[in-house]
Image (cartoon, rainbow over all chains, first blue to last red; front, top):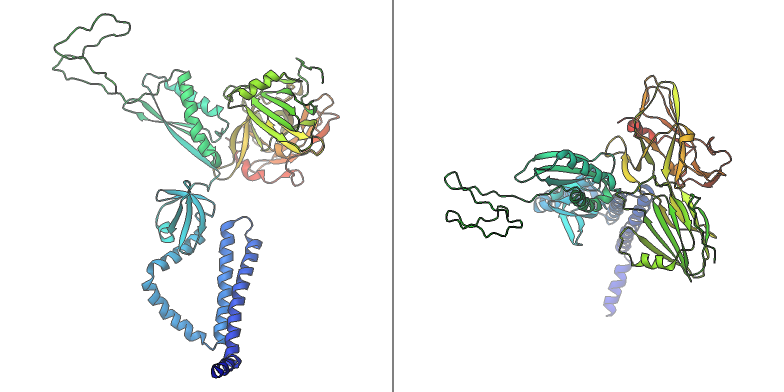
Length: 297
Length: 286
């Protein structure tokens, strides 16, 4: 026991122990200093931008911590030149081994540089829509609207189409409106314009757009596009259809559902048509054609 | 208890309001109807646009104070299923017997479009009288703390800018573009801004829309209870897109003896806009 004790004291009082202690202190200092400097710089230069704050914080932290670690290694007697050379070879080996991670890291750097979105934006990637929580080294984290956490690798972000729903201050709501063939299209346009005019959330300018889309199977189709402030987009998208329906009902404009006309061919007799409104007479039995089915469904 | 006051002639609706416990009053301000009700330690603020936004008339000229209002009216209001009616309650530790109703200008710029395009020939200037809807502020008298702010008319949103990317969200209104003061109707729920448009360029200026920076304007009240804002001058110079926008200090010349009753919502640098420069591409254009 005595022996162990002297051995321990010898080690602890040897110059190597002092060096080791200094190196550890340097690394710890680097971590603490890096964190503090990162936070300070982020607060100083980023303002309200959460993403820039994150980038500054990370870059400062890694830079300072790296410098202190290198200094600590030199203290321990490592030759950094050799270490860097070894790191080069190691990088190649690691690169092959961890291709995916490396590609994600590089993609992450590009994402940070290109800034297609920022923390807090609402984006849509491959059918997933959510709020950006963070842009990290390997992945982007989203919170979807049903409150699920989605992690998307940076490589996927770089390769796929990303839609930022909050980049611009105003957005357009596109609605497909079909009216019956019997309607006066001028009247329909007038009613639609009035609906847009009445809704305070609907921007007066850019002016609402009514685009003819085509003569459909059972209706004449128009695209009705109105603009809203991006924050009011959902509210307008939900309120405008209600108001269109109300206005159409008020003006007696029909929104048709699909019609199907049955044609029995030129060889057979046409379907007998009977006016049943207030009719008291029983239908005439017909041997050629049974009771006609309703011609709409 | 105060005696019942009901007048048919429009009278100013702003000023201090004193209500006894468990009584209420009704204010008809343009297209807005506002009720205040005081109970032991609580004030209730109820408001509703006069008709649905679909058919509301922004120019409806009403300014009527009815005090007190029967309890039956409030009972009916509480039971109504009308979505347009908003009821808010404010409770206090100590009883507050007086609040104040104050007019205020809109919180965003107002884009005014003349009903017919107006042209200002070169080296000419014109003064237009534009009116904008006022907001009704319910304030505590002692501390001037705001309880609630209600627009007398919810103007439609609009976008003012050269593109759909750059610009500013504003309120939209239409103006008859009156150029004579005598023709300007007196409405207690709207404030009048004299806008002077100078054209020093060599081609005529088509005034199709004007952005009025009302959130930077102060509100004045004349002895005859008319509400005015500071005057605004827009100068269009040769070789320059858009116009210089300058806010004149003091009450407008048309409102003599007017006193300042509300400061601007946002302060500006020297009353001169450089920020409007970028957006003015469409200020007078289409």
